[in-house]
Length: 320
Image 1 (cartoon, one colour):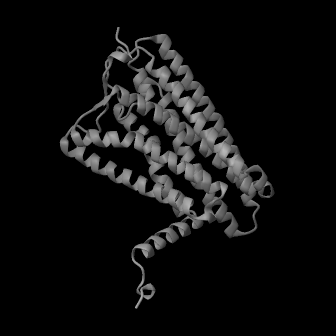
Image 2: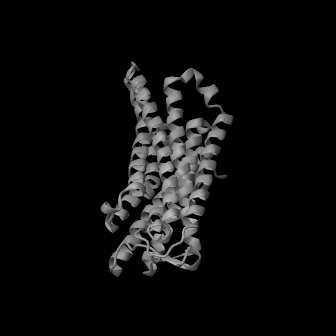
Image 3: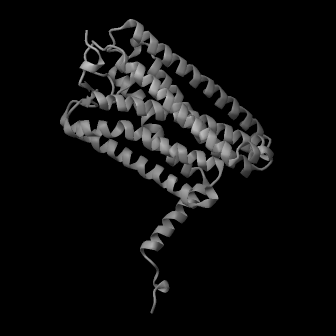
């Protein structure tokens, strides 16, 4: 019986078999990755540089962009490299790092999305208490709790997954190292059930967070419908609906990927579902939050304009 220590590498699932499609996938993923880097990088820079955006909502959005950059950088570059070099291999240590970083960042992101729904609830339903409930210290503590919880959960799942003896080969039916696919290689029923139990507990906590988010938005929408101003209702909906859309996509596809029965599992379904919860949210979050938020769009325009002026000063500012 072999275990994880005797495996030097894993074989990831390829997106395509022909060389032409592999290169097509590489260029497609490269475009998505660069768009995610640019979008999240602009949001981080705009929030950090514009003091008007130093508020709880944008502080949490900055953390969300950092998590998005980490999530998409954990999985997509390796998939691009494999498509470019026509290989499927990932080292054992690289697989361990992928699992740890991915679980840590995705867990922290979901907790942060829960915090962001609470922020919107307080801002809309209890505006007079916003300063006391979401002061700078409270915001830092909540963000630190999200990051810390993700780190602990990532450490727990990684240690438990790779302490399980693996004797079913080294091929993973996924384009990155995902825990359910690694558990399929297990030859210890007790260790397998232990990790499944931990995953079920994590899913239960995620479900509680999702219930909290749904209740928060129900209360928000009830309060918004009582706003007499049409413009006020539109502004409230524009800041809440993107958050709700991202959470819904993230939790449904993530839970389905980790908890689906083996009878409905297939390579194509695994790729599609994992792509929806690991790549799509980090790529579309910047577009959603920047296009539906006037303050952030103004800050981005100001940032780009200042950079243009610093590189290309006008002729009127030049000495005669």
